[in-house]
Length: 301
Image (tube, rainbow, N blue to C red):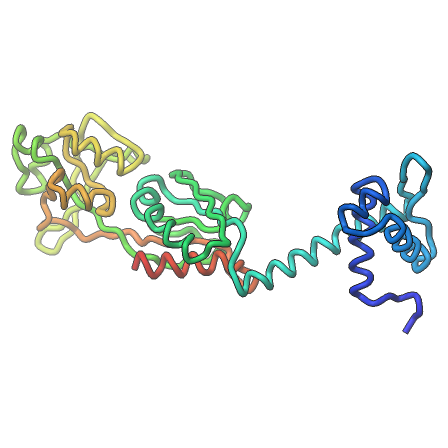
């Protein structure tokens, strides 16, 4: 073995000492940070320079300055130490998942289904810091905006991994007060005489799907309010403004409490949206992502 090549552990320690000296600006300050005497720090730098055969630091009574070789060595040292930290963190994650877990969920579903589960999840995994954002905007997971996103409906082709968490049906609802004032529709065509509150997604006209005698068809409806989320439409229905058709998860509790009444169930086409957790999978997937997706799949199945 070349006599100039020090053991790997000694070289890793030398990298830490060198970067600390540069960051702190003096041997004494670096020594305080690392628990070493200034002379021990100085000897460590001398050994590095002797092994490399170049001067890394220009020393004076007032300051330290990096040579060109010192600049190159510093960049390499920082890169190596970062890689070492990442490797150790990845191995540590295999045992006890830890770190920041960034979750993106739609406002209504996140508030009603995801947020109530977070207390239990953090008790099971106390080393994970949960960072959740509720928004109907689609975040860029591949671009690093989130680790896990909860998405509804068909998924676009992408290199991301998706795990199905369940399905969400839809239901036509109105409040008892609205039905008392305006009457109860008994067939879908009765909706032409009612104020139907719909989503404002881009389309030629608002239509609701129904099924009669085994045949699916779309019925055009109209109303005086449109919104971009089911939570708003559900609240408007509770307030007696009109009839709406929304995801069942968003109004399940209101139906159970009698604040809303399901309508036209015999004509429900049974259309359902799949709910997926979307994330960057693969062998390097952090354990915190894996355990969270497993947790959701078990609780939301």
